[in-house]
Picture (tube, helix red, strand yellow):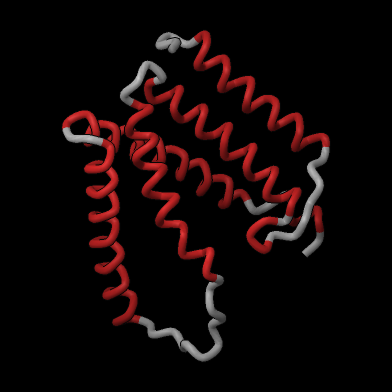
Length: 161
């Protein structure tokens, strides 16, 4: 794969990422409501409990249709299994923050800024088996715009903290 092809993916990936952002917003709102009526830990348990049920049902449906061969599939690295820990922490922290003066938009703006900062760092240092990639001017400008946008939402938005 050429560098140009990696930097300009198919439009379906943009649509999927955009839809994921909408689902993430909806999820943060629902988890915040659960935390408001219970607490952030309950919100995390409820989210992950329903996720487990959905995953088991999906696995049962997929398993009946198609059974993959296990011999050719490489094992996941140990650190890949820690996604659940970061997911639980994310639900707890966003459930707390969304019910603060930050609100939904401030929580998501800061979350997006944190994701972009960490992803640029992960690319730069080659974390998690990623190939090392130095940030170019476009990456730095995008990072600055996301952080500036988050600051605008938080400091000058209708629900300024």
